Image 1 (cartoon, rainbow, N blue to C red):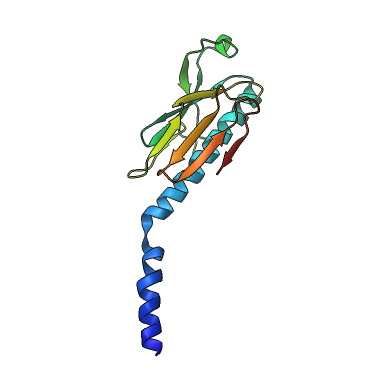
Image 2 (image 1 turned 90 degrees about the vertical axis):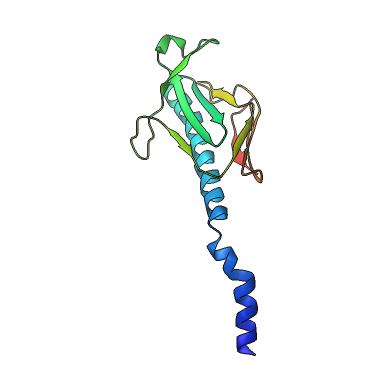
Length: 141
């Protein structure tokens, strides 16, 4: 009886423990959520817009290189944001095999923390991050 129970448990639960893709999806979701929240906080702290660009399975954060464009409606986002956790020159991340899509694909936060548009980001087609334009509120669904 014990052997039968162990067989049933191993057939149903062990694949869940070794399915790396679900852990990669969750890690990328958490990392993307943190990056978008950081972009908003950085915009408020510096008084300068921060852009979030989504492309296939990656994101990147940028600011205007020229401080005079921080409040301009036609800002050129050419200065990569440094990653606060690693110190790397660019705050970007991608996860091979895990898709990341956004509608719209590029948006920014202003100095008051507001987003330029209402945004829905989808990780692996199942997990969603929403950004509310009027308040800049960023949350996972």
